[in-house]
Structure formats: C-alpha cells, structure tokens
Length: 421
Length: 80
Image (tube, rainbow over all chains, first blue to last red):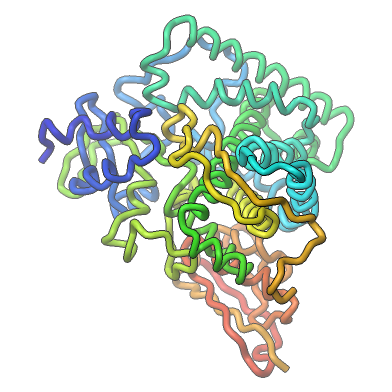
C-alpha cells in the first residue's frame, strides 16, 4: 500500500541535496518492493523484484512503449536511432550481437584482455604526472582521463578530441536524468539537442574515416565487417558509436572515483588492499554492489503485470533502483557494509539479463588497474573533503571532484616497503 | 604437480561470457550458448582465473587446487 509519505521518496532520493548519501531513502523505498510515486512512476527497489523484472520479457527498455511518452527534446534526427540499450528482442539481439562480434566472445575473445598493457601504461603516465604534488583531484587526474583515453583508443577516436567528446557526452546523459529533464528550460533543451547533433555529426565523420582508413579499433571493425548481416546501418552505427563513447567513460569515471572515496573512508580496507593486491578483484565487485556507478535504469511494462502483489498497468514507467537492490538485507548479509572479499556477490551493478552491461569487462579491467595503482603509488592518502561534491546527474552518480592529500607519490618502479613482490 | 582446478556449475551458467573476457586462454565460447573451459589450467593462469570467477554475473565458477591434472580433455557445457 502506497501512502502519501512514500509517494515522493524517489524524488527526494534523486534530489541533489541527498546525492552524497541517498541510501537511507533507498532503505525507506525497499520497505515496499513496488512503490508508486506521485508522478505515476513505479519504483522497484528490492533485490528479488529488481532481478526478476530485469529478466522479464514483459518489461521493455524501449520508451516508445510508454503510455505517456517522456517529454522529448527538440530532435536532431541524426544520432537518435535506438541502440541495443533501448531496444527489445529481437531488434536488440541483432544489434547487440553485431557489435559483440567485434568486441568479445565468441568471435573476438581477446580484444579486451589485449588492452591491459595499454591501460596500465596510461594509468602509470597519469600518476607520474602527479609527482611532486601533495594535493590531488582524483577525478581530474585519474578517474576521468583514464577511461576517456581507453574509450578513444577502443573506438579509434583521436585523444585530442576527448574534451569536446566529453562535453557532448555530458549533454546527452543529462537526458537520462529525470530531474534534469523536467527542470530544463527550453533554451537548455535546445542546447542539449544541438550538442547531440554535433556529437552525431562528429561520429558520422569518424565512422567514414574509419571506413576509408581502417585501424585495429572497434569502429573500424564494425564499419568494415565483410558479412553484410554483421553491419549496422549508417544511422545505427552513429548512435551506437555515441552510446559506446558515453557509456565507455561516464560510468567508469564514477566507478574509479567511488572506489577511491570508499577505500579512503575505510582505512582498514585500504591497508588490506595494499598487503593483498589480489583482493582488488573482489573489491571492485563489491564496489559495483556498494556504490554502483549506474544507480537506476528506467523501464516500461508491455502488458499489465503484477509485482509483489501490486498491479502495474501496461505502458507504465518503472524505475529499477539497482543501488537499492544491491543493499537489500534479504539478499546480502551486512548489506550496508563494504566487505572487500564478500563471497556470493551476485550484485546488480551491471544489471542482469539481456541488458547486462556491454562494457562490463573493460570497466572491470580499468577499475582494477586504476585502483591497484592508486593503492600502490599514493603514500598516506586522505580525503580533504568528505563528502565530496557530486556531479548533477542522478542515475550516473559520482563525485565531480575528489580532493585528496598525499605525503608523496611513489615512483612507478618503487616497491612498497615490507611487501613481497 | 599442482594445478588449478576450475569448476563451473552448469546449472547456473547463463553464458554471459564474462569469464571469456577475463581469461580467454581458459574459457571460450562455442557459438553463443556453449561454454568450453580448461578444468585444470596451469598455475600461470591463476590471476586470470580468479578474475573470471569473480566476474561471473551468476557466480557459477569455483576455483581450487588439485594435485594431479584431472581430466586431460576439455569439459563442455551447455547453458540451462
């Protein structure tokens, strides 16, 4: 039963004033697995129901199935073709398979692992550049530039363009933030649409360039696939390239920054990570549970459904609150505690089902390397500001700046004292 | 000689392929829904296998140690 007090909880949870710690509000929401909000949205916040619905074919990722379609921006047509992120089967399966063919197994199993040395080199260079500093913004120096360099590398985009790609990407992701969209003025919406148009134009030109002069990057492989059934249309390729560029850095930046923040809030965890480097592998999974970079995703019902006894009509807007499901005590013991070696960590940080994060393997690799190097090279790091300021975006939650003080930055060749190898 | 022992609970495996990304020398996909893996990979693959096990979205992989190389042939599995 929804009461008047619970019907505004989600709005409170995404209010910028609560961005640093939305978890108590998520806990309130979890008391009702399905919580109808005063704007007609159904918020799903428990682990079982979230997992079930993410695997339920009656639940759509395509907002065109909404009874009341969300407010549209003035469309720049190009760059607006749906991608596998917001399509349902069978169109989803085809679009995702075409890109996966060039990105991972079964056809290209080694692409991500082959980027390891390059990612380590970028992380080393970025931390080297901090030598001599004692106050460092982790977002600006590591958490942001690493994923940007990696995604530019993967897609074959010149790193010199990273700045404007990021500006465009930022404009586009504001569209998945319900609060930003509803608060935006006409002029702001116009600016977003323009940024999106420029971004699409850039990606169109990049794809043409990769077609004419193929490299060993993902976009070259996509546009030059020999089998015509393994190609995307030009319009699809543009919007897919945009999505890969956006998803490839916005979320991983938050994962790395959330990681540094969490480790510095838990000195005993930081000490263990320094002594047991292998622990980072499970610590990153725990981060994906404890501070997921994507807090929620929106969905739509394709038919009337009943969830945990609550009837939801066809065409309704659902919010799948991944970050709340990940803290559900019914699924995870000590759900509000960061346990770096947590066993049985079937978190929803990368979702579950057919929309399981496409870039998960590369996000893991980047976070494991960046955070390992953070632990290894920064001597006595501590937070300057806690909580840090956060980016405006509610679903893609992470610090906009993360200032730390260090005693010094170790040379990359320097061994940590008292540690075997 | 000690070897790693890799066990995949095939009743849980949904072939997300995350293990293949993490340890392409130990896990592979045949087509889109058939996982193939080396149940006794060399010690050198330890890090990769650990990453694969931790990355599994349904936590279907367990890693242990074995004293002799069990099952010289590779193990095949089909998703549920």
